[in-house]
Length: 233
Image (cartoon, rainbow, N blue to C red; front, side, top):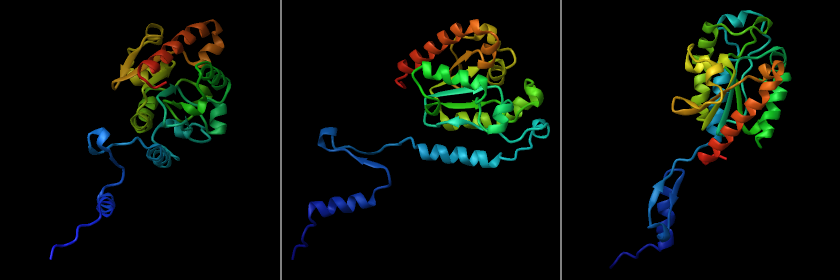
C-alpha cells in the first residue's frame, strides 16, 4: 500500500519550522530563490553600546579620572544613523548633565544639525575623551589616546557610520594623527578606516569666531551631498 503524501501546505509549514531565524522565502517571481539575508539590528547596536558604557561607567584608565570629573560623559543620539559627530571632550555643562554638547557649543551644534534638515536624536554625537579636563583645558595626547582606544574606536565599529564629521583639531589629530591640521584639512573629505571624514571647526570655536560659521555651513552642505550620494539621506 502506497504511503499517502503530505498536503503541500503541511510540507511547507514543516519546511518553515526547520529554517533559521531571519530566513527569507522568495516566490517564483524572484526565481524561487531561498536565502538568508543579514539584517542590521538597532537593538544589537544599542546592546553593544550599553555593554560598553557599563564597562567604563567608573573608568580610571587615564589621569582625567582623578582630576575632578563628576561623571563619565558618554554619547547621545541613535546608533542607527549614517552620520556621526566627534568632538573634543565634555565641559562643565556636559559634566553636570552627563551628555555631550549640551552647553552653548552644543546649542550651536543643534542648530547646525537642524539646518541640515536632521535632528539631534537622529545622529550620533560623541567626544574623544569622556571625562572633563580640569578648567576645560585641551586633553593631553595620552588622555586622548587612551580614551580613543578604549571607547571611541569601539563606538565607530558599532555604529558603522557612512560619514564622520570631525569637530575641531583635537578630534582630528586623535583620529588622523598629530600631523593633521584643521586649518589645512577643514572642508576637505578624507577617510578613516574607509569611512569618509569631514573635518570642520568645533562649535566652541565658532562662538569665538562667528565669521567662520559660513565656512562650516559650506562643509555641512558637502556632508549632505555626500550622504545623498551614498544613498543614506
